[in-house]
Length: 136
Image 1 (cartoon, rainbow, N blue to C red):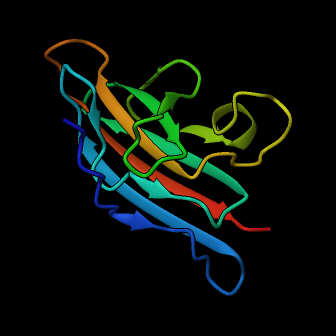
Image 2: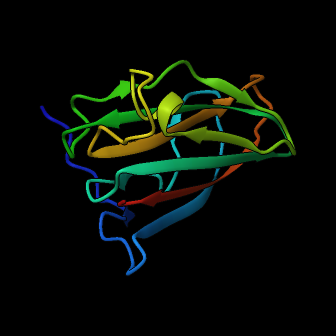
């Protein structure tokens, strides 16, 4: 049985007249990895991108996944998950997070989504995130 394709909360492949696009959200973490609500992003119209993250209450572990199929059947985790410390803004940007190679800041996938989990079991933190991208 195949999983149903997600309903994209943010389809941001159509940048504004300046070529910019953005999306943001917030999610409570659990002891198992969950997709952050609203973080399933269609980035096909974008070339460059970055994501800022900040944790409140307790730290969380964030993982960025990328795919070229809208049902995420071919998703891969980009790099290792990492801790987002309470109150300390953390940034992902193109060259280190959206590509497996280190040759620039180009987004080389069609879809991105963020998964989060508690850094310390039983200590639920909340993660706020903001993605911004550009098509030129």
